[in-house]
Structures are given as C-alpha cells and as structure tokens.
Image 1 (cartoon, one colour):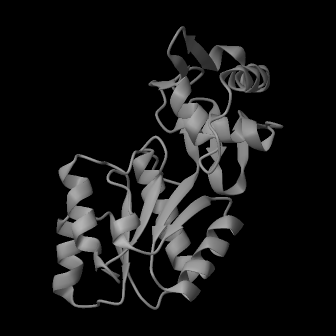
Image 2: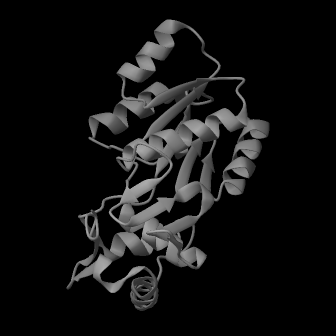
Length: 223
C-alpha cells in the first residue's frame, strides 16, 4: 500500500518514511504545497498524511481542493495546531483523522491502519471474506484454518483485489498499484501472478472479466 506524505519538516519526514517502510508501506514525500498533485487518485494512493502549515501554502487548501473534486482517498491531517477550531475545520473539511504534533509514531501507524480498514470497509485488522481471512499487518492469508504460502507479490495482489471484494479491479489499476514508485507492472506478469494466486487460494475465488480485469468472489465459500 502506498502513502503520500506532505510534510516540510526534514527530521519528521525522514522518520515517518522509515516508519512506513518498517510497516511494509511504500511512500512518496513532498515538502511544498506547489509540489502536491492536482488530484489524489485512489488507484495510486491509499492514504495521504497532510501537514497543515507548509512553507508555500496551507494544507487546508489542498484538502478543500481534493474533496471538492470528489476524491475519496483517506486523508490524515498532521499538525502542530491544537486548537479545537483547527481540528473541527480539518474534520469538517473532509479529513478522516487529525493528529497533533508531537505524536508517537506508533499512534500514527495505528491511525493509518484504522483509516485503511474503513476505506476497505473492514471493521478489524482481520479481513474476513467468506472462508478467506487476510491480516494485512501480519502479511498473513488463510483459507479456513490453513495458512496460504503466498509470495510478497501474490499477497500484495490479493490485498488489491480484497479492497473491493465483488468489484472488478482493472488490469491497469493493478499494474500501477503493484509498483507505485516504479513503472507499471507488465500485464503478462500480472496474468502469471493471478494464475499462481488462483492455484494457492482456490481457482473459484478469482474471476477474470475479459478485457477489463479481475474480481475476487467475496462471498464464495461463506457459511
């Protein structure tokens, strides 16, 4: 999963990128409002960590612009502003959470996991999809009581399909999300990964929608 970090403080930015890497999350770090993308596309970004006070502008303006465009990516505001009015303005402006500096890195990681669960419509860190259970933080997938032996790429692919179970995920979206910091993954490689994943989790759980992408059969095998 990929995080967009917009924070001007060098020490904090470095510390957050290191913490995200430990959690198995990729990240892109920007330090100025002018460098922020015009849109935050949910196909390439899972969560935004947004500082409100940037050297060339306000994080509030970025938040307002993205939400006015209808962007649904989870956004966590990180700021030294502790006034109730600022927190209310951030939350009312569309932020999913609000963290006051200084904060414990472990707390921020917990909040990121919480907004990602809500985004994936999962109530806990165990994603239950019929007989299939996924624990993203532990990089663990089970079918019934059996742990599945998935490669890192296969597990990542499973997560992307499980984010919207029952919905078709286009190949182009999968290609970008499997390597958010590099070139999109080749479609041929994706087909190989899907074939390997089917073999390990059960061929009936992943359906190919010809010419579009793949769909995880969310309720298959559920009691």
